[in-house]
Image (cartoon, rainbow, N blue to C red; front, side, top):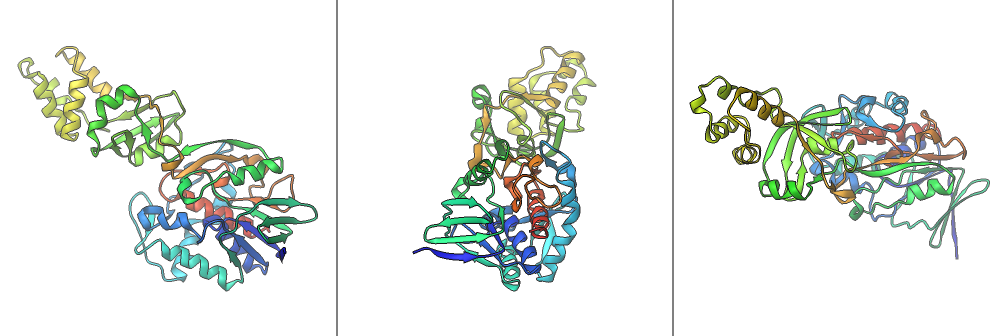
Length: 391
């Protein structure tokens, strides 16, 4: 026997974007249902930021986002700012702090964010259904969603199903399949904010340096980031690498400045020739770089000679280390999915599709990808807010 449920708005996905949308729609008196595949809401919120949720960034700008249309996110980001979300936290008495580079984290647990969103939903009458496996979505005069013995019907459908990152948390391609079902274009998806895997040769040279961390500048495709880089047993990670991974493409190189604004060989270039030897060079590099890495770098890139010209070339290489990764660490380790529903299909102010009235896409499923540091959460809040005020 089919149990029918009628609402004004149905939201698929109880993550950051979906819950924000539900709250705003509920404030406007809409009867809202949120359907979630998992057994609990906000699973990705709970694990983010080491369990403390890097919920936004004070310095959020459109330039912090990647999209085939770099202008698309501007309207939503202006409509709902980091200050707006901070006011919501303060309303609920949630303490927070800035960690670095404008990144805001809860003082306590990320669970506080989840509880806050759930409370807000309760206050405005939003109904949340968990463990819902959507089997079919149809649209005639309204949208009908079939899930087991339940059938949900509403005039508006909001897709907030997320991307492909972290499949162990339940990520699927459902949102993209739904977009395709309704004739929408998809920008090719790829893992973003993910570690990079060494090619065979580099793995042989550096994999035993696992655990070594260096502050570097990474660069690719006219983008650069100055943060920490971490060697792993398979490749490179750390914030500088996660950031540049969003721009990296297969079979291309990234460049790494191992000693930003530092001159590694200045002591040797100003010394007499007699003191120019590998042990002296290693000592000079150890003043700036971790000892294990300094020794390995000199062993693998010894100067061709002990002239100032050769030392200058050695210096240049250290500031322009070009590596060609074999691949990324994939969606398993990716914090977000780049690509997604083509923004040309959506209204930048409401997130509603241009060709299917009443159908909205928000959050990670859309082709808007933030940098590391709270930007993807801010996009979730902002896009959810805009859709919630339009449904």
